[in-house]
Length: 296
Image 1 (cartoon, rainbow, N blue to C red):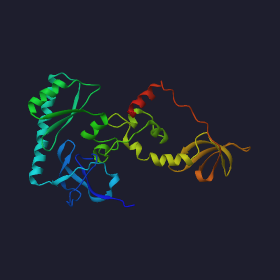
Image 2 (image 1 turned 60 degrees about the vertical axis):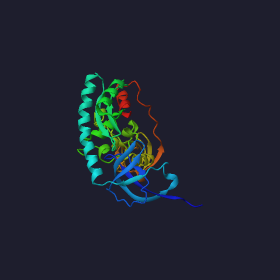
Image 3 (image 1 turned 90 degrees about the horizontal axis):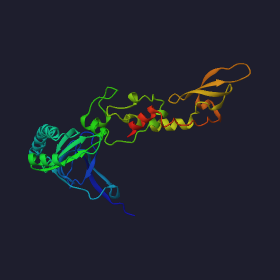
Image 4 (image 1 turned 45 degrees about the vertical axis):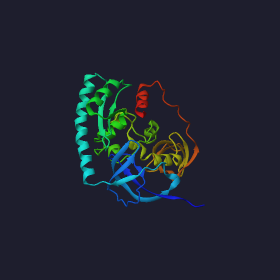
């Protein structure tokens, strides 16, 4: 069986944005090159983040759009002018939103490279009837107008900022796509379930909870749970505390002489009886309800 290969380049249009693959059309491109490409919404200017490489044809999402050319000085000038127009368009849209008394928060404005469309990104608590706003904006900009409602995670990604760690937000600096983050992850990592301590600037669970989850899941499988009965070198006892990362469990021994509390390495003990599974917290608990909201 002959495996068909196809040559592609990866292009981004925003910092930490999703990578899209294009047919380089015989152009040899390097990481960091600016290119003009054909996209579903028109002609766009992007940055090459993955240089020419061969991939299996079946791994490519068809149809593969083309790289039209490597950006020249005129193209770069056009891209810079578009950024200036986006700032002006943002101010105008804010005025129009106020005029129409709409309950929406404008987040960002984006011109397509060929100025064929202007996209306005906004957040809102519910649905917004912005038909009159679109007509008003179209009369000002004389081009196609698209208003796109986004979520709070996307808002944080676009606006950027600093996280609790003091570094730039992961979503705005390097995280190309959002991955599901759950309360279960915080529980398994023995983190405080205080909403203010495990939520990011977007008001949702911190994306970084996902980073170490695979390691925690692996350690949980081979580490006795609290209340498990275990056999130690000094006799039988009950696990009262666990340190997953260090691989240490604290055991309360119960023998004829005395009741001692000793730390053991996981490899030095054997589970005699698993701990009984504890019931989940009542769903009516207000704190749990608040935590559930953070998962959205």
